[in-house]
Length: 53
Image 1 (cartoon, rainbow, N blue to C red):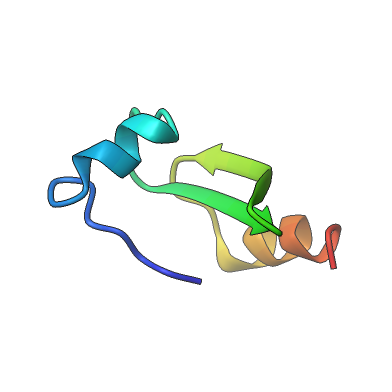
Image 2 (cartoon, rainbow, N blue to C red):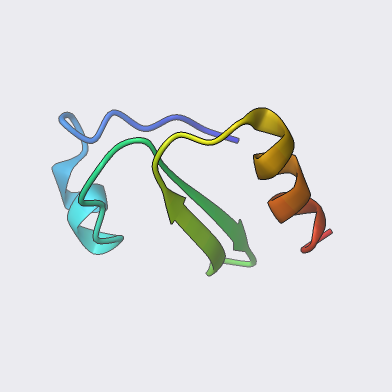
């Protein structure tokens, strides 16, 4: 998991259409598998990610 400052990385934010923060995305082999905007409890995030493991 990485954190990206979209103010310092505006090109990356545009590339992935980040319109609000926080925005979480899960990638595998360079392909985005899942994304969700907005705050979520840790258990919800883990449940979502576990579907792709």
